[in-house]
Image 1 (cartoon, one colour):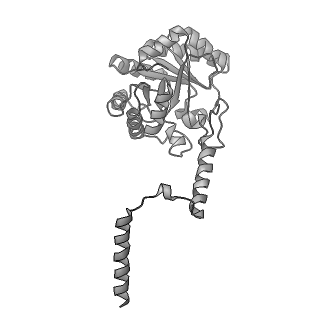
Image 2 (cartoon, helix red, strand yellow; image 1 turned 180 degrees about the vertical axis):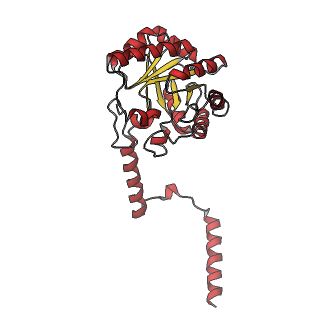
Image 3 (cartoon, helix red, strand yellow; image 1 turned 60 degrees about the vertical axis):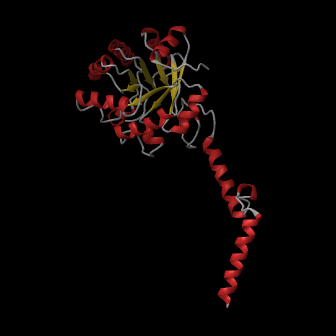
Length: 290
């Protein structure tokens, strides 16, 4: 694990060397500290926090203030990992000037080193303006969770030839804006591999197969923090949800049985202090009886 700070330049160099970059989401300080120490390349403070932290059914209710708040916490736990903040639904769709201001807020107030946008099309001009203003941009194509109401559900994208060709063309347009990387979500392996080969910027896959330049997953999914929810493209590397449930049950049982806390987990007075205190209590009790 390198101890050098990961930057946009680092990620580009990894692609040139054929070395994978590895990303996870994080939403708080302790998670950030652990992932940073583990050697993760990049952290996304994603609008996925709406589902795995706030308990919503999708990402749409997440606000810019939410992302700024969580980004600040995450940034305090990082020494080497690259930090990207998600632009949530409603923070960039209405007009370009407001979107510019909101993206800059993520950098200034959220302490993010880059921002991520879902979609291309009319956003290409905004991406280019931000890059020219000194704000690195991570693009996001394929399945766009913020467009869930428009697309009618979480579905694999670009499965037909025309859709795949359009996605490839859009990826090339994103590259031309100066975006430093491109997230490809829920697209066929072959399409993701073709895009990765055709563009010079790193591709980061989520449900996009092994032929991309890097992988990103939601931390809570990887660690199985919410048992019972398992996207097909996720591999569990731990089952922390079950571990936490079992540990909590053990704690409850120990308290009920009087086995916690033990004397080793408690604090005691010096013998002399205790003796004098006990004498004072006994004296006070005798006076009350009289």
